[in-house]
Amino acid sequence: MAKLRLGLLFGGCSGEHEVSISSARAIAKALSTGENTSKYEILPFYIQKDGRWLAGDAAQQVLTSGKPLSVDHSETDNQLVNPSSHSLSRWQFPSQVGEVDVWFPILHGPNGEDGTVQGLLSLMQVPFVGSGVLGSALGMDKIAMKMVFAQAGLPQVKYKIVNRSQIWSNPCVFPKLCDEIELSLGYPCFIKPANLGSSVGIAKVRSRQELETALDNAASYDRRIIVEAGVVARELECAVLGNDQPKASLIGEITYESDFYDYETKYTEGKADLVIPAAVPNAITQQIQEMALQAFAAVDAAGLARVDFFYVEATGEVLINEINTLPGFTATSMYPLLWQHSGVSFPELVDQLIKLAVERYSPVKVRESE
Image (cartoon, rainbow, N blue to C red):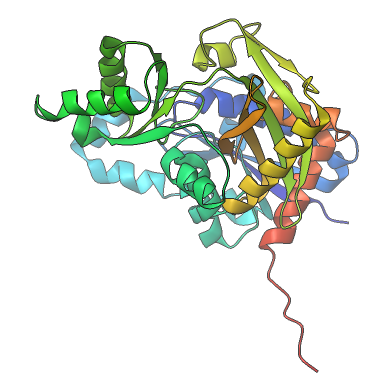
């Protein structure tokens, strides 16, 4: 049986470039393990921070070393003189693109898990791992996501939607905005750019001065911002695997000593602990699993997702926080660890995801009427 040629797409233009490389390395290792070696041929594709696609030896070098390639600034200077040369290079894909049977995009953050690359891969008419344009876009945009969750009847923390124009406005508008936030949400509250991952640009604020600073900072990342009420709760996560009939994993818990689960805590070894399975009542576990599947269906996700929750132990409430349709995929990331503790090894998980991609995006066979 011929091997499937798997296009492993990693790197990207977001601030999570290095995380993407780590995820790709773990996936490549899993594809070179056990039965997977006879099933798949890896074709690495690396997207530089300037948006250009590389394949072959250059992409393999990044995959092997784990270090991003530096962008040639002399070329960048030339592109300022002749901008068309840069835009053309972004659309001159390596010839190996035409050899791919199925794609595994492991691009985190904007321009990777927000539906943009998924749209490009859909135009290629080749199966790819993960959600399509709609599921990816909804999973990335925290405001649209919350609206969908509300429509699905999933309980959430109180929140307020803010636009950059309200923050970077005349001196009369901004103070009124802060007054409204203090009145409706109070302190502490969280300021989040709507379309960034890995806790980038997020701040926990406890005073008017911190609120003003955090809003201004968030507006530098995104023109749409969400402000959430703080809640005293345990942070629990559930992994989902499947397409139209997905399954939910065991529940995991994140514990940490820092003020909140920020970027440094998330990606610095020893800053956070992952507890699997989480020590919660069986009824809470079942409730979270059911809500995770509801969230997965609500945004039309596919293949994989990690759904995050707040468990307010004092009241027994479970509140949905967010869904991540392309979570971190290193050997120590929560998503694969949840499945490992649920009986699915890392190599098996990667294999199942590829099969789900082929299943979902292969041409639909229409049964002829008799």
